[in-house]
Image (cartoon, rainbow over all chains, first blue to last red):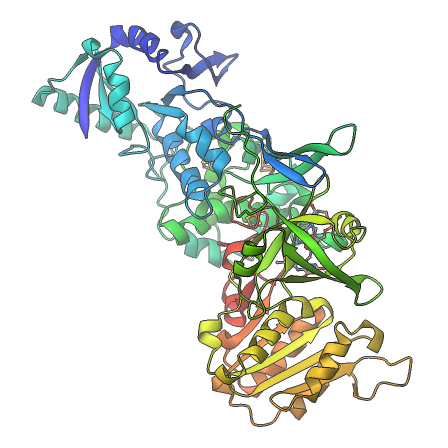
Length: 341
Length: 289
Ligand SMILES: Cc1cc2nc3c(=O)[nH]c(=O)nc-3n(C[C@H](O)[C@H](O)[C@H](O)COP(=O)(O)OP(=O)(O)OC[C@H]3O[C@@H](n4cnc5c(N)ncnc54)[C@H](O)[C@@H]3O)c2cc1C
Ligand code: SF4
Ligand code: SF4
Ligand code: FES
């Protein structure tokens, strides 16, 4: 993969030149936390930001959007006009999260709504130093080899910039003068040093090998009921998770009742109606069953199918759940407790 | 707006969520709350080229109401028409019952794995059905009848609560007359006292099964949940291997194509990996039933 260097002092100038490609978005400070926002003023970008409140999935699967307009029995595709945009500052875990969504939405039966937004968006990664809620090292999502157009990595006074796609190459050429193509042995040493330092900062380290088996053997464990007794079924853990993709579809009629829109909006497997079917039968009436589904999906299902968990270790559930149910707690409990079969 | 294209009636569109326009060609009441619908893509070429497998389902779409999954009841061996058999239970089905012949509905699919015909060919077949379970199994049954020489011995056991509640009653009376399969009918109760066949639950019919080579048999069951346990026990008693016992499962579905998450069971999506599962699947994948 091609790599270049950019002086840190030139970052703002480069961000400014990205605007000639499209809208520029990046993390900004919102109170004590961070959120993705349009960077009208590039100096607003929060380079020290860790996890944003909502993950970047909101750019590709908005919380609510129209799929179709209908009029009597005719459906017309309702694509929102997505202008070219650059998403700057995605950390490795979030890039991995996007790659998981890509697998879900672009492989079998490609989803044109997702595809359109994805294709209109350039992804620029940014390296980060973990805090005590990051667990990307455990999920092996703390580094990226793909899934981005450009990736910026700390290198002292400079950034090491990986070019991950031909679009990335175009983006570099928007202001090629700012970049230095000479990378020497010293840079490599600095890069390795940085990686060592970053890796040593993870406070949450779990060995996730065998997780599918552990989940299987803990199927009837009391743990699920104990967690369910605390859980408020608020669904926040799904909203903030970069790989939660569940949604509902709903038709909303205009006042005339003859036309309207078919819309899609985020749903959560934590909601009580999630598996409710006609006649009132609910396949997941019990909160414990719904929690189990969430964590089966994160820690077992994906490993079975793709060889990796669908948790990318971003720590958002740790930050968000009002009663402290999160992937780290569940892994601890699953691995620590006496297993009941 | 960049892509506000009106999709022609001759879908399938590149958008997998786009319902195809289909016309209700015929509808008739099977019981007081179950209706039979014959529908055909508005585009005739599409109607004749539409391919599917017994056991697959389609999403039926009513503008302003929503979408729901329904098993295909017809067989791909009789092209040109799709058939559904639908019970009125709620909002969408309630609306659908108001649709008359010649009205247009939206349909997309087919979805799901369907029955593993490639594996079933050459084997003896035992189909056990109760109630609305006829919807998917009628497709398989008609398919086998249309390809009779490709299968071995063929048994069909059908149960209903009363004669009036037996779906496709006339069709089954005719099938019963054929000599290339053994079709056994039973009802739990017969208020009319006119019922000429067996009275009792469907498992009562098992002793009438003769000369079935269990290792070489595929058995299928679809019906009300209470039936499964007892019927599967009978299959096992006959010695049919667990992976050759097939059943279709139901879950809430919003997309049918592995995106919305609602039909997830453990590691699988019912809409993609099902709705047909083997008894072995059910045993080793927790949560299936
Ligand atoms: C694979 C499959 C095959 C089916 N085949 C048939 C069939 O051949 N004949 C038949 O009569 N019924 C069948 N059903 C059940 C049928 O889908 C439901 O009866 C129907 O969705 C009820 O919709 P409603 O709006 O009338 O009911 P409501 O109770 O008003 O439904 C409300 C909402 O719940 C959802 N929903 C409710 N029940 C189900 C359900 N069982 N599955 C999925 N989503 C549901 C609907 O999408 C709807 O948005 C099948 C279900 C599945 C999963
Ligand atoms: S955020 Fe916490 S309380 Fe809310 S649904 Fe998730 S686990 Fe339950
Ligand atoms: S489960 Fe929690 S830590 Fe893992 S990806 Fe989702 S929000 Fe992040
Ligand atoms: S119905 Fe949406 S994932 Fe199966």
